Image (cartoon, rainbow, N blue to C red; front, side):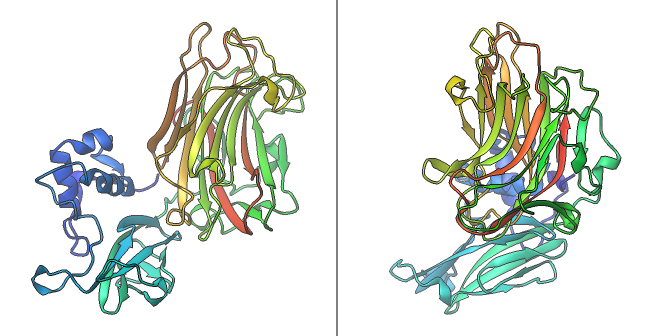
Amino acid sequence: MLPTVDLEGLATPASIPRTVAAVRCIVKRSVLDTLCPAASHIVAWRLLLCAVSALGLVGPGCAPNDLVSQPSTTPGGADPPGSVTVGPAVDSLLVGDSQQLIALAKDSNGQSLPARDIVWTSLNPAAATVSATGVVSGRAPGIARIVATRNGHEGTAVITVWPTRADAAECDAPKPGWIWCDDFEKDRLGSYFAYAPVDGSFVRLAGIGYGGSTGMRARFSRAGQVQAGFLHLAFGKTPGPSIRPVDAGTEPYREIYWRHFTKWQIGWKGGGGNKLSRAQAIVSRNWAQAMMAHVWSGILSEGQPYQLGIVPASTTDESGKVLGTEYNDFAHFRWLGTAWSRTPLFDETHVGKWYCIEAHARLNDAGRANGVFELWINGGLEARIEKLNWQGAYREYGINTVFLENYWNDGAPQPQERYFDNFVVSTERIGC
């Protein structure tokens, strides 16, 4: 599991004064009950980040500056002849993760000053180091105060470094409901009914997975590259032997969850790279789809490039007649909406970390618009679409494929990599 924390058991280390006090203050005012569900036992970094967002809403009685990096001040509280602020001011990393911090320096007139004059320092390099350009890297569990200095003025960020989970080989002990598990510690690539390494772009490698384990590396080797490889998994009842299932191949699944860990390298640019994963009901030998549950990023030219989105679609009419005749038969698509994650996974300050991404698709019952599509990031629900008439009364095939994809519609803007690990498909919630 990704690290969790019991709120009541939190101490208040000297290096992060008032942080927990601020969170408890929010809890007392019931803001976290609304904005941060299950606040008594949630992923630690989500608690702190959610608290940062909530502080602006709590009103009198809570200090809104407890979790925000403050510009340096002169004795007596007078405004300084310049200031430095750092963002994000509070965040967390896993050991081995990296993150870009941003320092904003201003003069006494509030005018921005060149970032090249910033000097970065870690006050606990055993836990986290920081480069000359503000890239902080988790080295060992602990808390580090990162300081950005310019002409004697300082801004700070507090970074908590958590250990990675110990069970990198989680497939050795599958949990109830699991249809498929691939932690890539063993070579299971032959079990996928289709795998495209694309000239070595998408390959299984030691040392690049979660916690330094074995994982899959997807490399866009040149600017403009569109396809960087895929894994196609089949399960349950399928329409032909070429779509080879990993289970008995008889079940028409009406509801599935799929989860993978993914990291975009530090310095990643251009948004999310569009295609990430999709679950589908493939219903003919030429891959006609009755329904699709796409997990995609936005596009720079079209909006939401830094968020992950869920995009349900269908090629049946509302009664359930399949109109699609081939794969991606766009002329017969019914697009059923879009919902975006709150977390901007692909912006400058979020790449470099592992994220646990889980999606859930439940088909509608015949005659009812009660289908559901959901997305969790690091255990927190970030997007949901409900009341879906996904495929009318159609029932011959259920959800029978999940694809992991690396397809960039407009081509990658530069050479760069992302990484996959711990891929699970299940009939029950998987978690992180």
